[in-house]
Image (cartoon, rainbow, N blue to C red):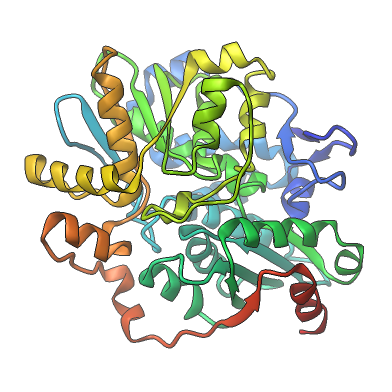
Length: 430
């Protein structure tokens, strides 16, 4: 499998080169040259396969010869060695719980897969690789955990000061070793802009081997397809599901659409957004107008210019009419998000996190005017947002075993202005 740049001014590369580069030299995102097709027999008999067999079948065509079959199987096994339960909330709505991994977030899958791939690619390298990642909440913790102690790899995480939850910040700042956290005085978009500019800076790239662990990296983005297949494996309804996905940088829903184009049955996608409504407005007006991110209680979705939307357009061959047939998008404000957490808890005794609540409200509204049943992606454990969830439910949240140790851990982070030159000077001289 080769990958081309969506800016179309760089040579095609294989999977390992795309993963190590993160972004093409012409600053475009890498995209697979062809979309592998899963056989219909595999889909109809999916219940008889293990998660590991599904993972290998889906990922092998994308990886190609860049990783040996045995090593890829081992990487898959380590990536998905936790549960992905599909839980019924109502007669029409299910929740795919993606928070049973080590950092309690869906991003554990992509981060664990990517870290193991980079470890494999760097096993004979003489130079260290530096991974830059901007986070609006969960990406940083998942990446930090996934890359902790990986030989030959340093990780630098940029997160917006005061705009991540306490548990999220603890996950970013308490690991040490090869993980460094930068607390940026700005928004997620500021953090992402610094990372993107770093990849374009000749001085940095001549001195340091840089790559990205955001979902712009194919090794982070592509394995997110897997839990859509795991959801379908557990789906017992006759009709294909409607999928409501909490959407910020749009890597997650983009992976779901990729799985659909590969052959996974899906009736419709809903990109459930918070107040950051660039895509809902685009689908309503056909005008794509990025704007500064707005801070919300569903902070991992606080993105004003989603990087992966260009990949979604490529999946639909830049055809707006085709996109609209398969994708809806709505914006849900904080008041509705909190009210949804409260209502679902009171009526169904199910505790949503703010991101899952945005997806639930979007799906519940959609089902009022469309037939079918659907599922939401519950992308993070409610314990990551204790103030919002406890205020809405009136009930305290028990801390899962995975985060108990963080409560007494010491945070270490470096304060930094939202200024690329400051970041560059620090990175060049660290």
